Length: 209
Length: 192
Length: 222
Image (cartoon, rainbow over all chains, first blue to last red; front, side, top):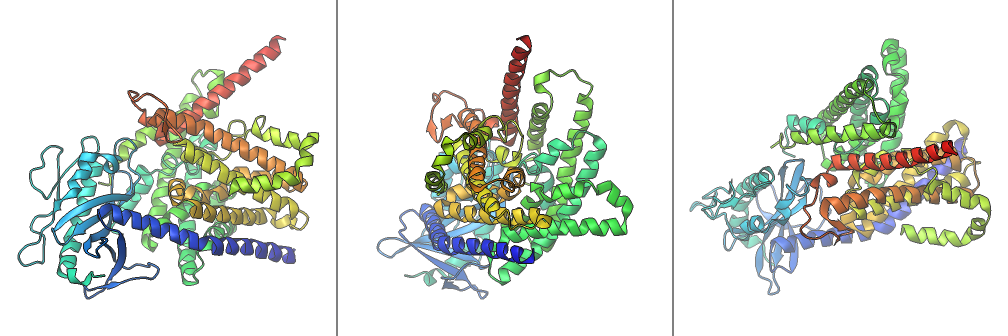
């Protein structure tokens, strides 16, 4: 009995390890491609991606390893090697479950220039408008996140407002019928940009090709 | 993760109820929701096993990361969960025969309950820590028990109703579960 | 991936198809003992991932693959597996097959893997697979077990597609992503929500029960 069990155990382990070794490079490639595609989506015009890690002393350095718990940003460069902007990951509670998003920030114009939902379980047909609604996505073509003179905080925090009442360039026009989902996005971006934008802007020279 | 613990609890028990939103553990849900008493006992047993399974899954995950073998995740989860349930069963039998009689029959059934494995997988995917996993398991168990008790209450009433032959059994139970699932959608947004 | 495996095996077992018993093992899973509609097994994937026809098909094929692989392994090892620990051994074998399927799907398409989520891993606890290993593969020859798995797996896929197609057509007005209903159709969002899954399955069961009832009535009248 013991020998049979060991034999079956070895057979199973062998099968798994062979599959794992065989598929690992393909899966890795797929994941990198998917991330690259998302980064290029939030940074219009970018054709090359470099990953940076945020160190404890608030400086950035290039990062090429397997991700553990590091805080990462993705820099996108265009064909001429000019920095288009940085893609930042953020997450927070949505209507149904946690929302994971990616947004693009351009230090040059000091605006957010793109937005993409990485993972969401929002109600199909209502909450998932945050991925499809064109008017909502247009909010993120030039959302103002410029800094104070002192360069350590945002002049105006990103603010989600009721549909049709957007007046200032730092406000997000929410969607009727998906109010909570779009507000949640606004809140996530507000909190994340408050943290990231000053750090990135003050180190914008570290992102070079 | 910046979710508060309360949030995780609400999320697992009401917003994303394991039975009504993820359909995990729907087999016992359809099977033992006939009587209120069995339903509440089953709920208790599942909650209990969920907490234990969640704790052991947390341990295994940490171990697998240190030895760098993510491909063993599924196998070790299922084997460990199955054997923990067995151990717990023996343990309870020795320590508290009263509790064993109350949970006894359900414990072996729970081993193959997808809600348990589902819980372990979800908590790993979400990257929960020890305390968060515990609260998540507690919430999931509470949600499961709640759904089971609600269902049992409804079905006890239905015993007295006149139902056409075609609809008897699973079909009717599924229809009720559908309505319950819709009403649980009203909880969405509680977290925001 | 799954389809290739099926076709490769088909050649080897072709002769047994012409004999009565193999065809019988194959047909029974498809209809008479359909795992979902008749035996009501494997409910959780049936309901959770059938919000579109594509997901339903992928889930069905993944289950089919795992079922065939585990049935083949269990039946060919059936004389070596010690009786006392057979269930644990089956679970070990099934978990291996599922892990293989999981990585294969991840390598094939990340989007699909994301859509099916943890439900691929949850094939392990699909009672259908353990049920077939214990009730059939542990007592029958390799070729018989293969046909049994193929029949049951296709029956399962068929049932998932029944749900997936209905839910996708009414829920989004499309089928496999192609629009089939006129643009003026206001889609019933409820169909792709969890509740819609329960309703659709309930309605299919009503249809099947109704058909059975009518048949029984006819038989009685004769």
